Image (cartoon, rainbow, N blue to C red; front, side, top):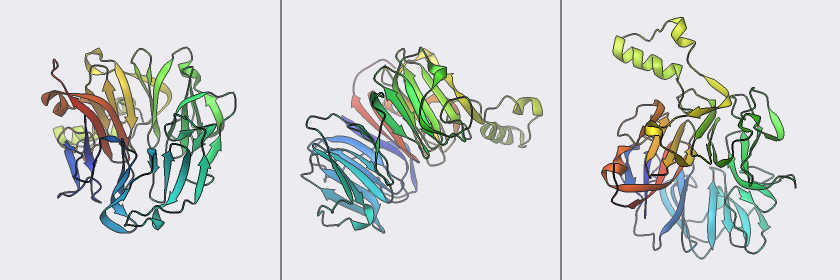
Amino acid sequence: MTWFVFGFRGFGQHGKGDGLFLNLPAPVQGSQFSAQIRTVVPSWSYSAIVTEIGSLFLSGFIGGSPQQCHCFSGLDCQDVLPSEKYMIVLMKEKVECWNMATLDPAGTLPEPMWKMALPAGHNSVLPLVANGYVMLQPPFFRELPPTVQAQKIALGNEYVVLLTTEGRILSWGSGRHGQLGHGDVEDVWEPRIVEALHGVAMTEVAAGGWHTASISEGGDIYCWGWNESGQLGLPSKMLSRERMNTQEGTAEGDGDEVSEYIAVQAFPALIDLPQESEASKISCGSRHTAAVTRSGDLYTWGWGAYGQLGHGDTKSLDQPNRVEFFSQKQMTVLNVTCRHWNTYVLCQETKRAT
């Protein structure tokens, strides 16, 4: 299996090479990876890579220096949640928060500014941990109500969404762009069920900058929140005006057409993939979205200014388009991770019908 990356690379977090961005997928590779990559999670200016043997690699703009690579081995690292100021590191028996300004280029483990022991045999995926979740700002640990049985948690810029073991979605935090899915733009400070999805069991949930996406048991995609760049897969006023400017030499549209565009979608909206494809995985970047289908295709949409959609250009899209690179290479996409302005994809080579 191989990880691929496309999108913003202005701080060298994809390794050596020229250019501000990659608009076609390129493999994540390097001699420093002595074991299979388990997961890759990008921050704004660097990427964190966890290997199957528990080592942690950081590549990019770190500690004020560009294009550095830090290696921390022997961690039993399971997962990581990075930001510019702090990094949460999940290990087999504990979770720690590191201050990014204190990292030692020699690979010496930093003294954690916060840590918490975890029960033996835990099977968490950040930001979810035992009895609660972690965030990239103090207080780093937040408890969940004992009545909430969480399966997965996703963090947006100013809000949280949670998938329960029963397939329900709860959300709380800032709601100013409709990203909570409660039908309004009000803030909510306690977990609240997204009532519009009542009776529809969900299997996946993802949070972007100010938009949210989920997948039902039947493989349907639902999106809600901010649609400024078409990241919901719904008609975007901005993109329509860009198309009109290109095709007709004018950026003006008539009032009837503008009324059909969606800037904020406060209720979950059903998004159709081409060819009635069923989705299995979904992830949200700052203003773009990517979904993996059960047949192993990748679809992306939203803001594409840094090539983060993987279509070989920097165009933005307000409807899902298949990334042809993987089908042309006869690769099956297994998973996808978006964060901010780039996209990481896990693939394997297979012979399959296109």
